[in-house]
Image (cartoon, rainbow, N blue to C red; front, side, top):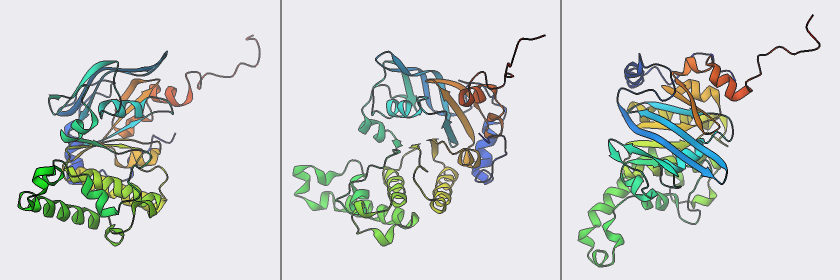
Length: 297
């Protein structure tokens, strides 16, 4: 794991400097309190039979920053995302978003509160066009209810605003030329862009991105990185799961590390690779012990 190198890029803009500045002086300790947390989790536990997939005592995500959640396979990262975003239930614990309780709320209510997530395997609707996929993500559409649907003046303006927003985002993510194509015909990278653009239709305050670079070609990775850092620079809070350490080191303001369901380390990206708990999580606790070839003399 080449995690000792300094950030490669994406963390030098004014907003990034502000995010890093706010986190400056924050001790690199698991469960440390942040200056201005947006998402706060306490004693969140999720077990499947006898396997405890998540047992996080305390974790805070700093507002306006990019936080990477990393760890070996099976560490519990996606399960934690699923619980917090309402796609799975916790066995214990509580969490809040922007100071308001979010524990146990279903996914649609979590999204309406301003916390939106994407998935490692994209969930586009293949038999709808790209534009239709975008418009489906608009919350509280009055025209979806039977009686208001009969009176277009009640919802026509909202629909025009939604379409304008969708067109703006499709242009931003360079998907305008495929706006009328079925989502099922898009490449894997284009589906990633569509899912990210669709997540922004509700104007969220925070995005949870589950392996946004998985299955994406290198050229498109750079495009996605640019979009994510730009979103942070515009004030959006981002927390993402990722295995590519170059990506993590390149765009993160803060890194949290999980292993065996627990939070084992936190800190700025340039310090994480030197943290013994992180090395232990990836390489095992006995990785640095000398090989014993015989009895000591």
